[in-house]
Amino acid sequence: MRTLVIVTNNPLVKENVPKKYPSVKIEIDYKEISFMDTLKAVRDMVHMGGKILTHPLDGSIKPNETPYESVLLDKTPEEGFDMKSLDLIEYALNTCEKFEENDRIHEEKVQKDFQTLDWTLLDSGLESLVLH
Image 1 (cartoon, helix red, strand yellow):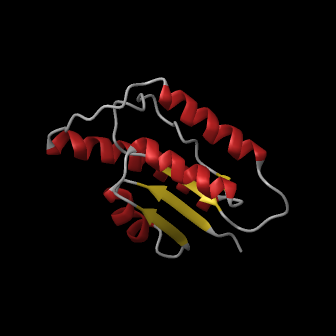
Image 2: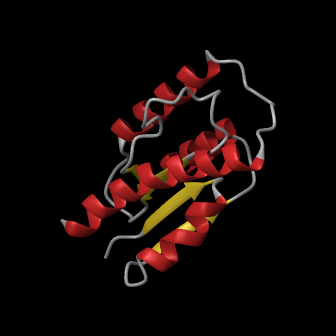
């Protein structure tokens, strides 16, 4: 059986996943950390054998424009190490390093919009996975 985990810093993901997918066993690794630190947590999970199922830089928003990031992984023990996942997360980290981290604080409505966008992108990937 698959062991799915979502690494996220988005409180909306933490709230919505159990409601929308009550019959799907998904761990939620939620921490109040930066976008970049979320990617580093994904990288750590890949080093422990996880396989990335949703792209770390999905959507068309630059990493320095949104504070929220959610990535779905399969951490079911398999033979070997998933080099594609490592390449993908290293590429995402290198891309983020090209952008200056933005410490601006957005008003609450803008925060909610960014949370909703991140949730919608993740939910699309989850629906594809659950339907197949």
